[in-house]
Length: 424
Image (cartoon, rainbow, N blue to C red; front, side, top):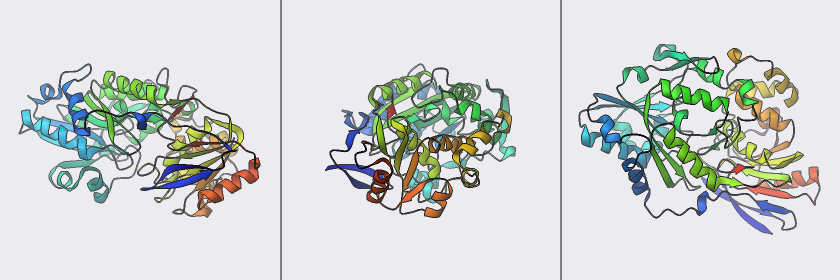
C-alpha cells in the first residue's frame, strides 16, 4: 500500500493507494530544487542583477512617488519576505518617496485586514499606505486604450498618477494564462471589470494555446502583456516557491524579459509526462489556493491532462470559503448539465462576457468528460452536488466511489500538488 502526503488547507493528509492500482505520482521537481542561499539572499541577488532593466535603486532615486502592485489573499506570494526588502531598498536611496501598495484583487473580493496581516505582517499593515483595488469602482479607473483582443483597457488610475509602477508576484503554472506573475499583476490584477471580462472571453478560454505552461500565441497572455506595457510597469520582482511556500528562485527587472526567464526556469523543473489513468487524484496545493471551489478548478485541469476520457477526478480541496463566486456557482447550479453550460457559454461574444464565465466554462469542460469527486469536510455537500460534482468527506470514501465507477482494477495517478505541475 502506497502512502502519499497531500496538502489540505493548512494541514496535510496521508492518503493510501493499493500498490496494484497506483500508476504513478506526478510531481514537479520544484521541491527537489535546493537553493544554496537563504530566501532573503535569493531575493537580494535577483534585485542586484536585474534582467533587461536598470536596478530598482536607479529607477527610484529621483522619483517623488511609487506604486507597488502586490497580490491579494488568494495568492501565496511570500510578501513578508519580499515587501520589507523592496521597501528598505527603495527608502535607502530615496527616504522621502511616497509609497503606495496596491492590492491586485483582479475580479476577487477585497482582502480583509486579517488577511493583509497574514500576508504582510502587522507592521506593514499598520504603517504603510495600502490601497485595495476594486475592479467595479469606475471612479477609480482610467481608460488607456484598446487591447489586441478589441476590449477596452481600463486600469486603476494610480498607474497614470504615479511616477513609477513596479510589481511583486510569483510565478506558477497557470491553467489558461500559461504562467502567473509578471504582466498578470496589471491584467487582471488592477484592471477594471470590463477589461477582465473581455480578456477572459469564451473564445480565448477555448483556445488550444490558452493552457498551462503555454505563452506562445496565447491570446490571453498577449492581452496581459499589452496591458502591462501600457501601464508602464517598469520593474518586477517575481519569485518561484516550493510546496512549503519557500522561495527557491527569484527574477527581477523588465516585466517581459525577467518574467520569461522565470517561466523558462519553472518549465524546466515542473514538466511531467502524462499517463493514461482511469482515476486521477489532485489537490490545489493547500492554503491559500484551496479555499474555494473556484480556485480548485486549477488543480482539476492538471488531472484533466492525464485522465482518460470518462475517468474519475478526485479533487482534494478544503473549500472552507465556499464556492468562491456567485455567478460561478449559479451558472453551474442552474444548468441541467455541464454540456448545457458549454453550449450557452460558447454563444457569448467577447464584449458580453459575464462574471466568472471563464471558471465555470473550464469546470464545465472538465465535468463534460469526467466524473469529479470533491473531497472536503468544510463545504456543503448539497451545493457541491448542485454544481454537478460528487462529494466525499474523506479520501477513502472518494476512492471507494471511484472504484465503484471504474472497477477495482482501475489505474490511479496522484498529483500531490495540481497547481505546481505542467502535464504534457
